[in-house]
Length: 276
Ligand SMILES: C[S@@+](CC[C@H](N)C(=O)[O-])C[C@H]1O[C@@H](n2cnc3c(N)ncnc32)[C@H](O)[C@@H]1O
Image 1 (cartoon, rainbow, N blue to C red):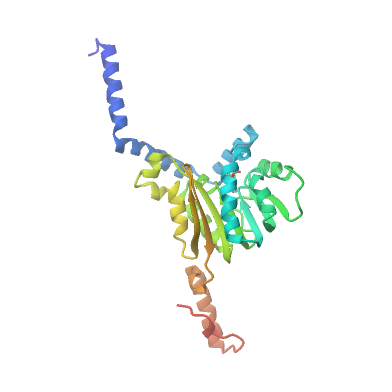
Image 2: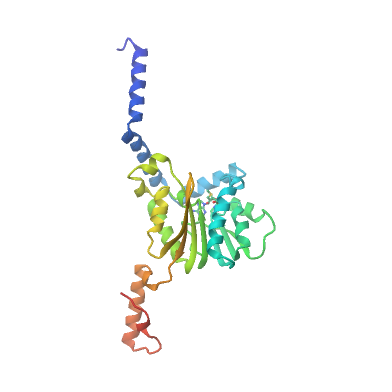
């Protein structure tokens, strides 16, 4: 064989092509890639990647040409709010402020944040904003939630968190920051088709699995869902019921009630709240 280098090369190429076509090997390649991405992910890396995007491009996420998304997102919000306005909106990952413009007339106040200070500066100087709209550099992974909101908009952001534990903790904190009865609009871009189809995709929380995970939160109900070829949009509403508070909160409340009962504090009536 050593004497037939061309034949060797051709056989090598054929074997490579045949292996590439075997589903589980392709899937394995993506598995390793996603495993590596999850392992390397962290706040620093997130910041570096986003920083680089904004330094190199005037509109890195194509927000200026994003009219279709904006229109669909607006339809979903308008359907749920009717004639009323949201009181306090929190837009996470506002980029250059394209969707903030739409929120401005639909909300009494808007806090629009982004990890990138460059994006925040561009959004603030996009035009003259009403005083009710504020911008701030803010990190979804690290910074405390700046209050409670009756609308949270989170479009195209969660898929940039590659570590599943980070995504889970962020989601729990966001739902906690939502007022009972408040709405949360989530848009998630699909991952690579191989990852979307793979059985292991759910463990990495990529693409459609992000939306599927978000739906499982017991405090949320799905009000509307839309799908496009590249993304899924879901509008959630937080339930009013106290029975759906997260377990630690329920246990804290139960403990507090027991203390009050033991003290015989007559100013409260523990029978009003059923804690199991
Ligand atoms: C794909 S763009 C989406 C922009 C806009 N929401 C939209 O749907 O058109 C994602 C935005 O999220 C921001 N982002 C990424 N990681 C973030 C984080 N950890 N905290 C806050 N914003 C983040 C990015 O800087 C970027 O502007």
